Image 1: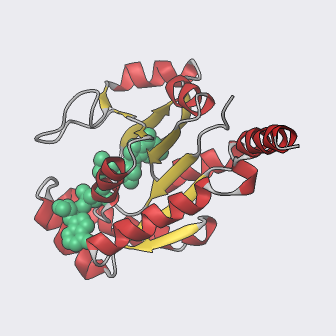
Image 2 (image 1 turned 180 degrees about the vertical axis):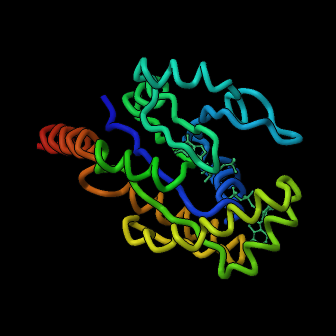
Length: 211
Ligand code: ADP
Ligand code: 5GP
């Protein structure tokens, strides 16, 4: 028997560096599983089906909403995005920790049902930096970037609903802080009941053997 895995929710404005940080965390922490979301938006150059997202049309997505197939879903920048439920729940039961990289609406829905999830908000140090990162990434046209920037300000006002904030200024440092948050969370007593019982039994056995 093992304790359940941790549900980790990472949000922040588009271009904040969530994907970059998560990719590095997965390299450092092989037990972390990244939940692949479903979306109705068009794939960007280089994005792969089933790895970046499951790309589906609106009809399919809406059918799955009716079937209650999502842990959460939201409409972000005119497209649907959602977390397939069953896979995530199975992983958590198996003791694996799962990262959801989702928007703030989805994060708040997760909070209603999974209050012991860990909520991390990633922000760039300024709007100017965010603007240049979005342009530098080169994946979105001007209109899309404009939409994303205007949402960034209004959403920042809701950051206090998260447990942790990571200002992504220096990338290495931001990765290290995020990894530290996750390491600390895995050590919480409340997340280690099975492990404590196991250690307790071992201590008891050792005590008996030694007498
Ligand atoms: P998000 O997943 O939050 O939309 P990305 O991870 O795609 O953001 O990052 C947006 C762009 O900014 C990418 O081109 C990425 O390489 C770059 N980037 C991320 N973090 C930093 C950083 N700390 N310093 C400089 N560039 C960064
Ligand atoms: P992008 O189009 O840049 O990949 O993502 C746009 C936004 O959608 C980001 O804020 C991202 O975190 C969010 N997003 C990605 N997947 C999901 C999801 O499954 N659910 C929700 N609610 N948001 C998501």
